[in-house]
Length: 385
Image (tube, rainbow, N blue to C red):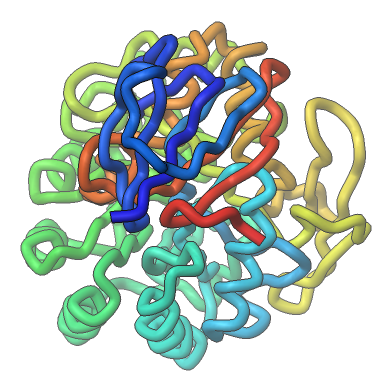
């Protein structure tokens, strides 16, 4: 076996740091973390100048990047372009995300994902954010395209999951029954509640039926009151619920995120998603979403994306920026911020082959410097273009 050895940086294995160590990679997989001087003979050595070597970041909600929205053209090429647009920011695994659209677009996205996951270009599945959302919490989605889940949809989604591997679907609790959630979950589909005006009781019933978590906690959902905790309260309190969060300085005030981080109980954790749109990785001032212009306004921690009426329309943030935000504004230790972009989303998505640097897992890697900036990424041990 031909080995590569990475030395010169602290190694974060998805859980903890290793000091004065080397990462050994063979045939695109992690072989071992060893002492810095205890490495295979004749291995290719990659010397890093300090910083941290970590698992490549995993983003479960990526609408676009590199100038392309998945909704514009639900094709394998779009998925590859989106993945490539986020790779300079440390993300090596993405779930391209289709925002609420017509049935033909949904089917095209499913077919594209079936092909895209066969390659080694960073596409790990598909996230369908709609059309089974609640018009009362539509956000930037088109309410006229939203509808309840039908039993025929359940069969379609289970077949799609079998072909794709990883299929995440955001649904409003109001638009899906407990029986349908159970059937989808048993079929391997990951259900996330979101864009929902759900009661706490309805949300908990769907979590108990197999719903795995919530999409962008706090945003586009019933808020927490002291007598009606809503979907926010249910997600924070239910021990099995995982919570994606957008940490960009616009979607959620940091105080609310700090409270949620401290309050979350059980196996479920908060993890970072970008909810990124096509402008990430570009200098473009705007783009079009379902026939409406979305404007980029500079200012704050990162730029803000809004429709004409001021409605937030996704984010302009990348994953390494969310990690910096977590350290600088959410009082997170670097290790926890890294977990929220690596091992936590891997566990949420049930990805056993990535998110950790343990023997046998993929050698998808990112090197970050002391300023928490990405210097290089690798996929299966190979430098990313």
